[in-house]
Image (cartoon, rainbow, N blue to C red; front, side, top):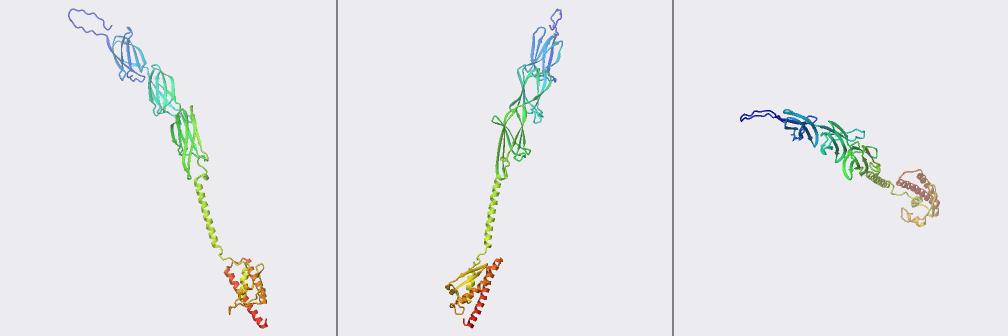
Length: 438
């Protein structure tokens, strides 16, 4: 009933009937008074049960109904979820705001914490929710730099899923949404701290560390000066592969090590401590050591050869005459100046050396200075020469024992002087023989 009145009709007349039908504007808003775009607003007459219509709200959540006076049931659906039911009485034109049961839920996603247990915001994670009541999915929304992802959700239960680096790192089956809230979510993301030291215990710079999962490379880094690299990874099992390539004292170095880790519930630490067989190796195992050794040996060999050559140059080329030979030369010199033939005993250094000479030897060297003819010596002349010679040779042997450093030329000069003295004695002997007649 929109109008009731009595009219008396006496002629043709036009009557205007003011029906009690009104224009009612509904604006559905969420908990922050923001209109619910594309919300479905349905109106049903509470008295008759007649459906008055269902309209889709505009982007601002507004929809207008023309309704007769009465009491109406109003329902609002948003994202296939019932977000409002209420009873409204229409008595006049109206502009009503419907506070829908739509709330803001902020999901703050952090990782599982580093080695010290400090949790860090997880940026770049994809967060998706599913409305279990309406069986609809919302999202995903990517977390910002602070790990936040905010959803506007209808009243009801939702499920949550977080994906990071193509891996599901968190799920929750039932999360009731009843008001604005912030949900703290700790994702299954942990850290692998890789520390590398060389054989001296020093941190190794420049080593390559590769992380692989199921045969697929996940991440890789090179160690800085402190020898530590940190990987932030979804939970799972991984191979941690370390390699280091360099040249050490002209020796190629290529070191590789691996370790299998299970990153399931917490962060962990992996240490690679290189041995002396890895790097740095002992110096005596390097190529440079062997090169230096070869060079040193070559230098020593060259120095030794030079030393031998110089020593050979310093040795005298003419060997001094042997005992007996020197006496023979002196004796022959004496005989040239006049002496006797036969067997002569010559004195040597430290003892008497006896040399026997044949008549042929004596005749060969005994030549007269005047007529160049061989002289004949009597046995008495030879005996006198033998008695005089031993007195001269011991003096020369004594000089040799005292370590005389005079040259062979000086010795020959002394021998010549002795020969001259012997010649003078021989001449005196000859004169005496001439006087005595022997």
